[in-house]
Image (cartoon, rainbow, N blue to C red; front, side, top):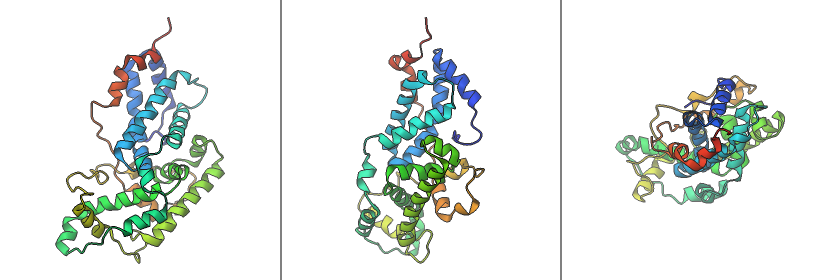
Length: 291
């Protein structure tokens, strides 16, 4: 997965692809979509708390981008144009299942407290390591859902994926200073909860993820053979993050490192909505060359 919001982004490459798309090239459209689908999906995954909802959200965004591509006038950065659409769609889309499940930090506390803390012996602790990691990531993903949508997306892009604050300001149509203020507030709300309840950073808090994981397996909520969050750690978010922006190093905290340690999805099925879109004559009508 490439990070299109990094300094390695090539405006020239994208403009060439867009011109070819508008001239009717299906191959160029396929390539353009593939350049952005993985990144959009992984941001959506953090936004929606559910891989299926993330796929739906990604598809909705890409359809919107494709149908509006002819409106790009080449007088601004394509990246900014595209990801403003992404940001607006993520903020305005219909309410997702994960958002209905976690409405506030207080609500999340009640739900976690309702799960029994099962006793574990040493053998079980070793056996359930991967499932416990799944529980940790689900829990941290749930914490993000307790932020409002704008806070959540600003934190995901600004801290987890580490985008430049000036670019972040452009995407959210605000000033760099206001973007930093909103990012600071999102951090504060998230970190206050983690300091109070989570043992991953503050060791004086009891780490209950392994105990909760055992109970959730018995309840049929967690499936050891079908982990959704703790997937192959061949790639992590941290691999796509750059630190060459105005954020001071001290802001890259233990909290941020925890979120950047989460897996990214790379292996999309060959028969995905990319092929469906490119093969759809209705969508391709948007790219017929003028007579």
